[in-house]
Length: 276
Image (cartoon, rainbow, N blue to C red; front, side, top):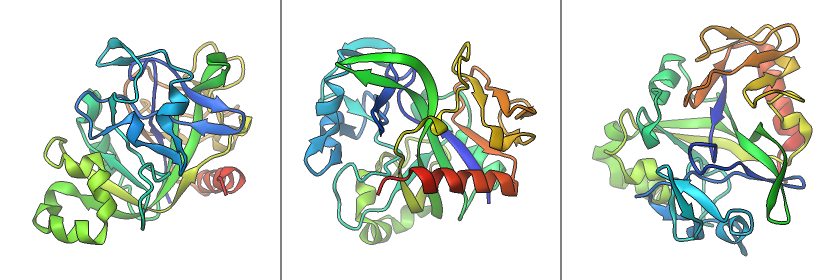
């Protein structure tokens, strides 16, 4: 089993702020996308709580295409991954879309995942930039935090599936809300990972990737991964203290060296932190 650390949500470039830690609650903000499929006001955190109603308490402005913009629920966004049923759909299944040119990223994310032979049964652990939010302000250290997961059940190559598009939509109606499915020819090497199991974590400090008192957020420490390599980091390895320095790039996907202890670590994180 492969474990993939997948960067998703607001950061200093997309959105311009951290996502939200509210007590034990983790609210990952989908990145803004000027011509996106959905607006922030379309997304629900629960049956009676919109994401935009929470976000407007914490963000006066966000960065959209590098332009400082007053936050509004009408701003379009890239609602992916969707592991919390943003649209309150029946027969929903969690999904992640990936490609080689989504949102102008500099890496070839899907080619990297394909080269690492990522597939059915493997686990994405999603992480992003977070900080505690109190009284409409962010307090404390901004840091990389694990916020959710998706275990792959099915992989759809979007371009190859176009001849069967209607048949697949009949099987999975919720795909109509998946940006990588709707904008089928926009993204190069466009792929959708459908989840068998998925969910958002309850926050504890065990989910922090950034080590305590780090000088910058890319100084990670995961003691359980000591000695294991991490793809996409110029042959980086978690050292004897479980530390690794992440490269200052826009890469999104990092595959941990396949090993039983990596699997055990991921499964332990999920078991301890998944929301009921």
